[in-house]
Image 1 (tube, rainbow, N blue to C red):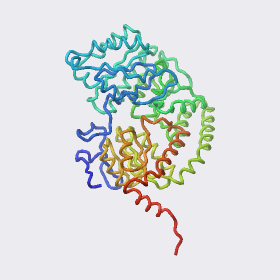
Image 2 (cartoon, rainbow, N blue to C red):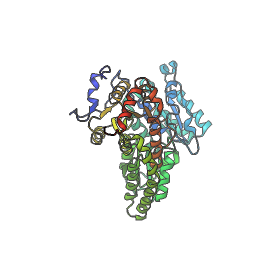
Image 3 (cartoon, rainbow, N blue to C red):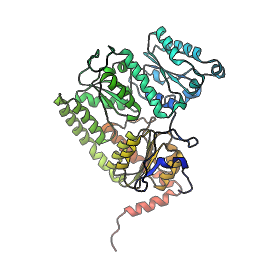
Image 4 (cartoon, rainbow, N blue to C red):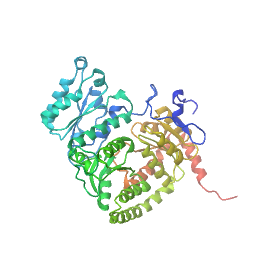
Length: 473
């Protein structure tokens, strides 16, 4: 659509396979005025730490920051739900002039006495960075008075991108682990009592119950999950994370930094996996089983598990595929690693990916996306609504996969939408998650409501006519 232009400064962040020869530009701050789909540093840290259900989450800043991120993950808990309470120091003009340290200390002491959390995370917002409150000093003081870990999260929104918020969250998690570990030396065996055949799962947030599905797979394999960071998380489990033998990183953009810190401090290796789609879920389970090669029965259990699960879901997937084959999909997600799995899953359903983008992808991520995508695919970094609408219309997509900010774009353009972000309630991981995904895609893509959208009915009728075989005259 020539009527929708692309900002000149963003042209190198848009790549068309088979047409452009440059390397896509990425890992940079959003262009001012571009109305980026990204969130701020504070939001990035909040979505990572939020699912720890028995911790206090206090936002030090104006009330708007707390309102913006209230229940942002929708993460499910099997027990306490303190994380679903939104607390803020509600800084006013007077606090900004005279400082908010006293208000922060008072709020912490009152909240800890009232709710008895196992730990407290204090999120620093933009205004706190500007006025210079010594949040670290307040946290140390309150920790000494209350006897629980009180951890500052340096997530001032103006410091960078959402990815910098992930790092701030990782720093806080590592500090929580390190406060509790035994011994001061580095490496396995130095003051660390390892749990045999155990893992930590990093970057899984239990939005729709995914944590419970994945943990059940590992239980059937004979693997103990020490902690999940941070889906259905508990402070005590996070504090025991240094005792695991392996870190399994699901959302690579958010928790890889923590995995690297733990590898350096405790000698715990890590692998990157995805639990979305048949191929990636199977690979994830096999990779973990391979790590524990000294216990061959784990691999045998894993083979049986994968065979049983795949056998159960293939018939329904084959049925749904008949209606989806040849349909075109656009993908825009937070981390590029999620996009890899989505491309594979859509190809399994016979669908074509015509657009794929991410908020936090790096050079390696986009290089892999180029290899995975077909010629003509548009690859976007840190896109905005106008760009997404432009290329979805140009490519005549039938489906948009994204989050809450992409939903209105899809519906206004009259195409199906699949929520693959914080707000969904149905689990999409694992083998049963693949069936849930296929059902949702099928329901939205084949819905007759799109034939009522102005301009769409004629195009759909032509497309259906092309797909009907005609006898030769």
